[in-house]
Length: 418
Ligand code: EPZ
Image 1 (tube, helix red, strand yellow):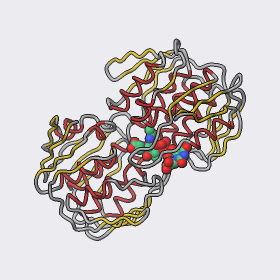
Image 2 (tube, protein in one colour; image 1 turned 90 degrees about the horizontal axis):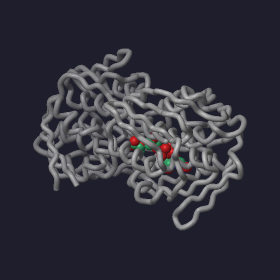
Image 3 (cartoon, protein in one colour; image 1 turned 180 degrees about the horizontal axis):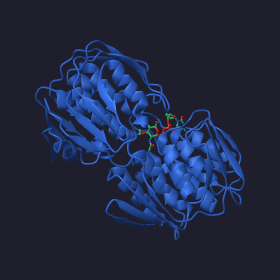
Image 4 (cartoon, helix red, strand yellow; image 1 turned 90 degrees about the vertical axis):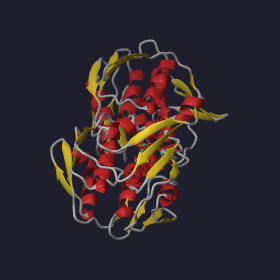
């Protein structure tokens, strides 16, 4: 297990080019199961979850060739097998192979993903949608076993909640189903649009991605494509918040700022000085920042994946703030750790009450989940003194070699093996 040692009162200078999105790359990699032609993806981020997904797909017989910043996958010789608990446990996105396997083989057996630090993470909406396409499921000894007689049949699928993963699973399953599918109350995240655009470039017939209703007309097969992955809006948002906290000139580049509208509105309401360009956001120092109240919500609402990061910022601005977390039932694991660094945050049910005007002081802290860990990094950069963050593997799942990425921009941050 590694730890990070971060010196406080960091400077941040220059700019960062944001890489490809983890949450877009994961379903795109899985979509290789739907075709026996080459799927060539560029702008793939180098992250633990991405490496684990490639390992899982190789176990199914997907051939994978990695070249610099480009990957070629081919699902011609895939064979069905059981996705074992060990990989699925570490990476919840493994559940996305269920839809493609059912549409390809008519059967699939996957271990239930189980919960994680931020919540129980059930898959009932995934199963509900796939059932409406004709699949039948049994849950046995911690496995979900799906069966389809002959093939999936297009149908109307009404989601009780706009689940991102369930929308992706049903979208991929319906692409080769017989007839038309309509996903109602679909997730509208940019990553859904990216998946639909990639599938359409392979010959799928999908319309309405990014809106509440997605229409899919099943096709017989998919062809070869070469597709560039969307940039990571959560990594971009994380660096924008970091620059606002450190209050220095900084530029976050190679992004679609429109995907961060809710964050930009919130930061401007706090008094941040942002210049939004076509493919970047420029941050300039500002006199004073003040507290605000926000609520996380499905896209285009404020993203739950930036909740921990903005909470660190809220601790050092002038005045108090509140955050209501409406997506996950236990996504305040960073609160006790931020309090160890000098924050003063109380949680009552799904709302966090954040006192402003705090000064972070370096201390040893523990990372718990991916975005909680990065909020500790942000606080550490602004703290007086040194901070040691343990269990850094959480960070590596979503942030490429953060000590190198940040180290190039000014902060003193080093990784040690323990
Ligand atoms: C995706 O997770 C992202 N992960 C998450 O990012 C992100 O926080 C989440 O969407 C919300 O935006 C990937 O894309 C790999 P959901 P997902 O299904 O698909 C409940 C990160 O940090 N739910 O939209 O799992 C669920 O428990 C990660 O990069 C059901 O009840 O999210 C949660 O409370 C963390 N039943 C809510 O819906 C289901 O069948 C949102 O889940 C499915 C979900």
